[in-house]
Structures are given as structure tokens and as C-alpha cells.
Image 1 (cartoon, rainbow, N blue to C red):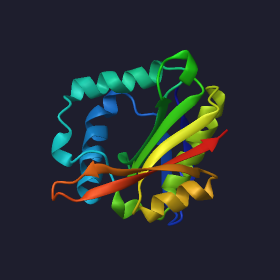
Image 2: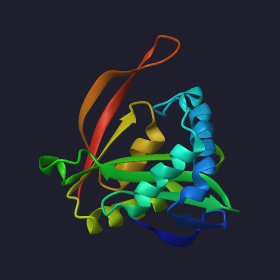
Image 3: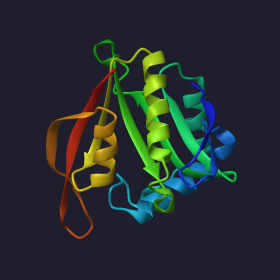
Image 4: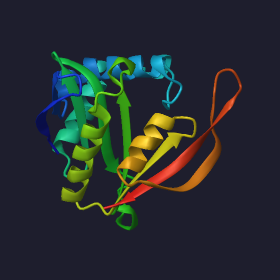
Length: 181
């Protein structure tokens, strides 16, 4: 699936939302490393991004060719500052109606409307792909993200206690949320 749109952010800047291509692979990796350095709310630590650029390029090509998965990145001045994606929970008949969602936004771009714009676009693309439900997991202390998801109508359906074990030995609970399309 491929997406393209331009929007004006709350600060007046023009942002391009588009599906990253294989040519954006290095930037996508750098973005994921940076956002993982900026917050403990991400699945991976920065050093866990060991995927070679060519493997990331192939991964992005799979999104482009897919009819039920999409990645949308936010570009400002040619640089990726955020990305979000949906993909099937599992490629089996019983789960084809369910998509999983993830998003990351560089900290200095929080509060500008990028997250809302990406989530809105992803929800529309999910409908076109035939999904009936979008699911996500969010760290229980990530109040900004939870507020965003609730604003869009996501509801909590459970908690996964001690889902993440941090380097310092502490744990993070995950809240399980879903949106019925």
C-alpha cells in the first residue's frame, strides 16, 4: 500500500506524509534508533537495531507491494521525523480482520499534530484494506500516547503486566488497546 499527503502542522510548517521507499531505508533506521534513545516507551533499545540498510530496504519494499500493510512516514525538510504502520496480526484466515499498529515520533516534534495525522491516515488505509479492528500495545506510563489513542476512539481491553523488563531491572506494563473500524 502506498500513501501520500501534505499537511500544515500546528507550528505552520508543511509536512509530507508518505510511504517510505527502499531509498529511505537508512533514514528509517536512523529514526528508529533516535526515537529509541529519546524514550523508554519503545520496544527496542537503540543498539538492538542491527538490521543492515539493504534488509531494511527489502522490508520497506514489502510494505509497498502489500495490499494489507502500510507504513507512513512524516517528512520535514526531506527528513523523517515520525513513522507509523499497520500490518496483519497474523497471515491466517482467523486473523485477517485484525491489524497491529505502531508509531514513533521524534521528541522535538511532539505536540505538532503529526501523531494525529498519521493515525488518521492509517485508520483510513486500514478500512480500505478490509480490516475490522486495529490493535496496539502501549506502555502504561505513556500518557501522551494513551490520550491520542483514546481521542481516536481506541478502548482498553487488557493489561500485560511486566511485559517489558528494562536494563535497570524494572518492569513496564503494557496496556492493550483496540479500535473497531
